[in-house]
Length: 85
Image 1 (spheres, helix red, strand yellow):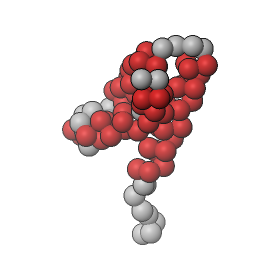
Image 2: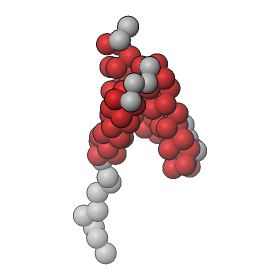
Image 3: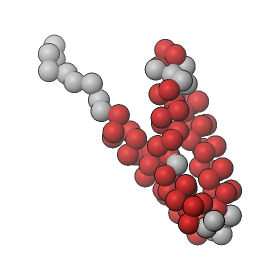
Image 4: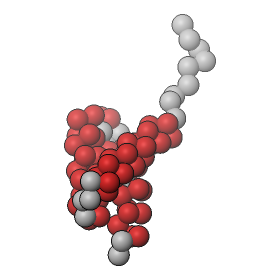
């Protein structure tokens, strides 16, 4: 029995989501995709990932758990769009 069990921090998961979103943004930008298309692709990937995780379901803390996780993918893509406006 583990009486010292702590709940995992969401920061690790959100950080990983941000790293993946940054990687996808970098690859698509390097390939020459338009910034808005990069944002749409990262958003679509984030939504698909969270649907697969079930994070939009109430049983898993949804819908806000899924929404926050999707937003964690987007910072790099948003910066790319803003810098190209």
